[in-house]
Length: 115
Image (cartoon, rainbow, N blue to C red):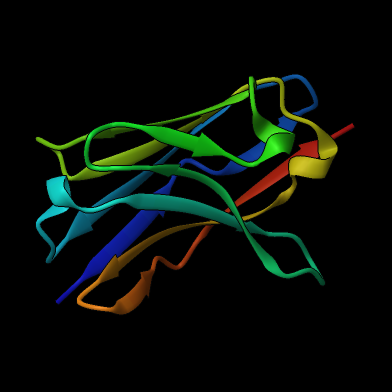
């Protein structure tokens, strides 16, 4: 059974930082590309950052230079370090993986950035 559990969200002032974690189970974590998405109220869910099995990363333009995705294969965990947070980063953040052609999501963690 594939499980993804996010944690680390919260309320922070603009300019602050948060570190999100996504602990996984049920997959061979080290071979999978892992993704972070976010969904603001009333908007679609958008891809924020990805990290491949070889450690290569990609980011949506709005977070480049502020967010860092990383992974710890020994802990089956992917992280999203978010710095210099802005009110427009406010959203629910979701961890995602594609396994055997199916998409798996965590339940999300809420990030609120106050101005």
